[in-house]
Length: 97
Image (cartoon, rainbow, N blue to C red):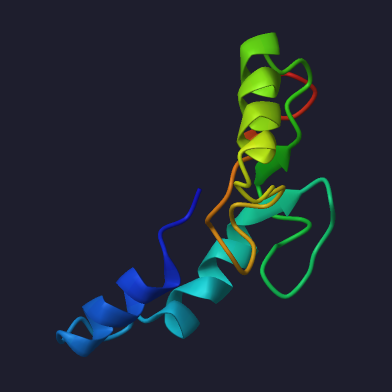
């Protein structure tokens, strides 16, 4: 999971040139080979293969379900526009490796 957009922008505001969200996002996209494909926030053909968990643990699925029952928003993409919520993380692997 990437850091929060606001953190990168704060680093840039504090003088770390080249570390704003808009500066680092192209590098994230270039490195990522997401099985969901490329988009505004994801790369599709980079060397780091990002995929859904092949066999999520039952406790993980139960936790996400319990969160939903308690009005915690579902999030299926923690590297998407919002990082808050509960869901199963994608992992840096390809076909379980």
